Image (cartoon, rainbow, N blue to C red):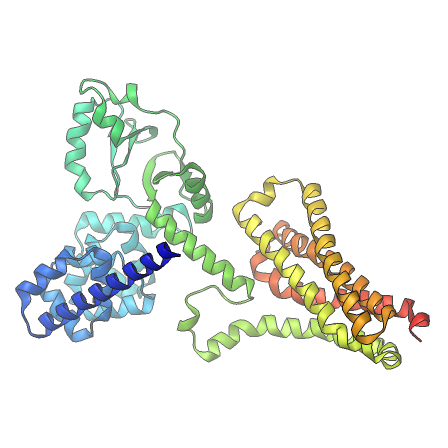
Length: 466
């Protein structure tokens, strides 16, 4: 407990110190004390610079552009998490040449992501104003799909020739390292730029200067292809604990690398995407960016479909109207049966969707998984059923009703647990994203199944009830 309180207090102190530093910078900027402002601003971490920048209005941002070089602006632009519309507004509000220089000085993969969402005429204008090398690197990255390895890779990496000596490689490293995103891994290529090996910076430093790179490199290199889905790349980096992974084109040429910071963004993006899809909502953009009309338009197809499915439940209730008239008490337990089945199905669904996303279910035995779910559903179902039977018998003095409700609950929860696993698996086999359709579909289908079980059992035992 004391550790948690200590951590919280430390975070609170840091937040206060950060706020005081930001307030001081704003005062310096507004009073036009530019030298102390520039000195204090550049002492901040790039993330904090971006955070401070987000607090400024347009007038103060214009002052900032006059005080900082495009390179200094680009350093914290790489950390900004703004919507495409906000970034477009910021860049078009700058002098066009200055904005082009900022984009050219950014990490190329981040600049390419921004450029892809700018209006075509704005994008072409910025490209025309960039340095030739920057323009070509960004154009290459813009050709790849956003959610692929090519779309998230950077071309700012270090590679060396396998025929270099360690001394030559170190000299080369000193020249190119300032413009590289990471130098922890150094990739080795042959004369045709094909990836043939890898060497860590540590191994390079401790090696003898006269040794050849080809003699000390590791020849087995795990790599990804430019067309691989970004989610698959994330699994590779997670499984191998990589800080960076090389990206090859179709001819096995080394064209870029993907670093851990890019994969962290991918993991967050995929998690948010699955979360919105699980709720039957669009995963494009932030929900806070949508107008009420746009949000309603995204949700209506699902809600209309579920309304039509809900009519099946209403039809079933009317079919068993005679049963309800004879034993009105049965109607009181409909929400419990449907709700508990829905809860069991949703819990099972969450595990299944997660397992499909991580690839664990693909590697598991289908029969083993089915048996596990059956026993899980039976154990949770029988526990809840016995508890409910005791409560109904004591409170209402109706052991037969208690039996019907408890048995129905047991069967419904067991079936719901199975459907929560196998429906998303079936959708995955059909090429449908299980996170998109499974949640709303399973909730409604479990209502139908649980009511069918409930009233079928009630009809079978009607003689004992009346």
